[in-house]
Image (cartoon, rainbow, N blue to C red; front, side, top):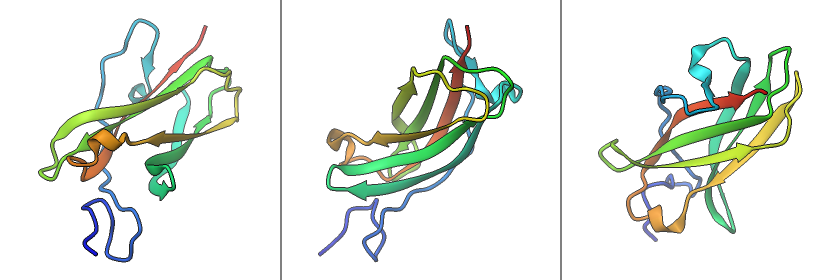
Length: 128
């Protein structure tokens, strides 16, 4: 059986990792790339289950203050390494100092024909 490009020969999910690309801040969001807001992307990986492919990871609040919302985004890359879409998830539950948010973002089935790998786009947080 020939596996799609996003699976390795042993059947496990694979992906390419890239550097974060800066994204302009929205009205309420502060880009984590600013370096001093206290959100740390501790790890992220690609996996698969009965529901499909996903990107999962953990973000820790290393700041003294809580965040009211946190968002993480990943670019989806085609076979040539070009970004053609993005997937995001957002946590609107308060994340206190020292807390860790575990996230999972499923890659839509509609993207499977183009999808080859992914890279971190941004991590953003909101404080009141």
